[in-house]
Length: 461
Image 1 (cartoon, rainbow, N blue to C red):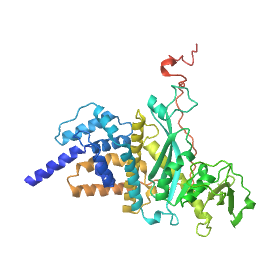
Image 2 (image 1 turned 180 degrees about the horizontal axis):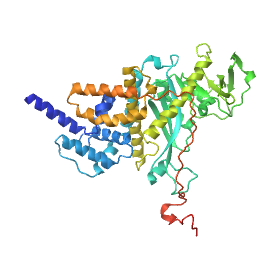
Image 3 (image 1 turned 90 degrees about the horizontal axis):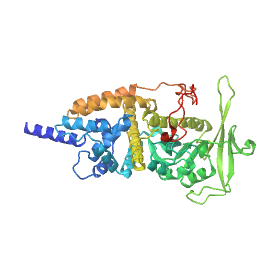
Image 4 (image 1 turned 90 degrees about the vertical axis):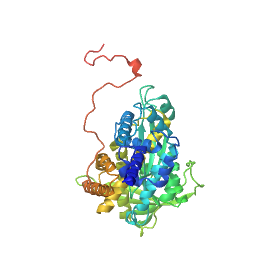
């Protein structure tokens, strides 16, 4: 009996030391041991908000859109009292300072390590013709209008001072096999996607064999850089590039080899001096649309072997490029990362890293559910997984002292996730248009304290 009480007291002490919303009971198993040790080393003092406490509560905030720091503090208070520990203070200052103590480098390494761990667990069948495929695309985020954020990420030039919000450009590198984000480049609106691409070369060369992207990346400089790194690329042909189809070397009816010459002005970020010419394979893909004219899509690639890499296979691969748009939709819409909430650049970057950590951990959970029940990981609903995780995490955390019951609940959770599939809707028309109308409010054309009272539109001055 004494041993039982000692173990129970040790468990309560550990639970109080890592008080959280229950997420560690589900996602803690996917956090690499090295990253867990690095997080624990961040603080040596005995605090209420230890690094792991802060980490899991910060993660719960990004998974629960709109959850303020006050609610995170209340969560820790409830967890400590449940474990018969003295409750912490009700103010949010200690928790906010604890979030600021989490090292940015460790947070960045955490979601990258989760992505690598997921890639190693993925079966070889997820590769495309034996190649590891990475997908690249850009997007943007906004954050609160503070002087520090404005200096780091100035607002769009078309907005008046005091009437806009800081905005940052992001370039993400995703794994096509797992859907995890492997690397991310951060810049201002002045940085184009091509300008941010060199920040991804290290991760790209170490983890992938083929890069997939839209027409913005199909340039001479990008193909040269890929070849110098021993990689291949598949991009849509840029609309400004002139193409004489009859001058190319014929490989098939809609398959040609062209020689591209080095432009006069070349990107400075090439790893090595660029050659005078490179050979590029261009594919003409005919996309029949019922009731309309056939759409013609030109693809450019460095996969010159038309026998090993048929044109039909490359066309089918490029069709999967749209999945990176869905990945960004999951992060920005389902996880509400489109508008960040922190007030200074350092915390904005930490919040960004926590969003990516949560995203990769959820992808890992989805992948395990798919493997356990023979489902396609891409068919499992990301939003459904987030919803199920929020509801099941507290119950799994409550059964941590009962391993048999915990395993039963976790297997049930995986079964539920594997059954929540997105319907198959190939060739569905999804125009980028919004059906719900916005409220007809007047726009802020000057700082709010200078705007004054607005006259009613029906009774102008």
